[in-house]
View 1 (tube, rainbow, N blue to C red):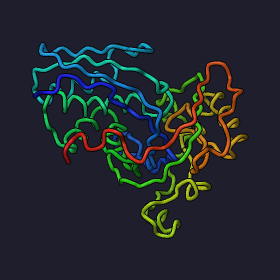
View 2: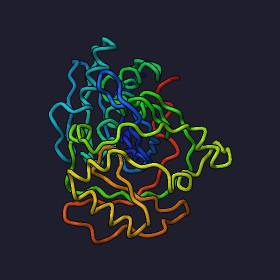
View 3: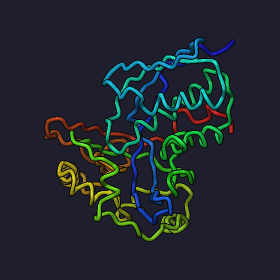
View 4: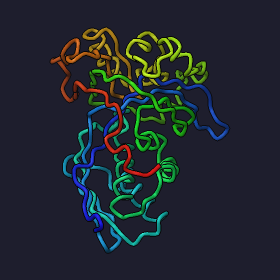
Length: 298
């Protein structure tokens, strides 16, 4: 029997444990290295099949742009697969917009995986990832199913087994435009590339690295200095987490910041209660793998 609906499909956010800009391609795209970790701050999507080919999005919370990445992903899969099917897509948006947490890309990835099932396409994962890369550089990561060392413009993924950890996340009310960050003269574009095996070696050669310790004094987010010059709220949020947890770092192109808050059953401290008006804070757990891992055949 064909699947007609899929409800409560999760779309988890991610954090960049570090983000280095290691070069630039001739076409202007920046070459990055990062470790992406999935967290349990998720959007939730619901899908119902339509036979008339229509793609319609229904916002169950905050109103999204008329033609967001989720709809573009659905349309791209519909065209590429030549299917006559459509879908009603409902989104409960929880991940903050403009945070550098990949919320839109995660929604798009979950949409590709869900519609691949709903429409009975049976596309293999590599085919979905190729389609996703053409829509957004973070989408292949969310399709990949695991935490990863990410290189290039987001298309080169090395899966990593990371121990679960607590991560305190604060999203200021302001956000920054990614284009402004990458055009800033404050952006370093020549950070020395990381050799992944060197990180493993520093943890005793284990394939399950405690990155909370390995990266405790390692790396940075190269996008953070230009972001701070544009958005002072980021610096105030980072200082608040630094005072509480002893560390802080911006994720992606901002404006959310996070702090490592322990790997035990309970975090080492609670989320600060004195957040500024309009800020959102949440104590998150990292995920060992994406909740939709295995939805598309290898």
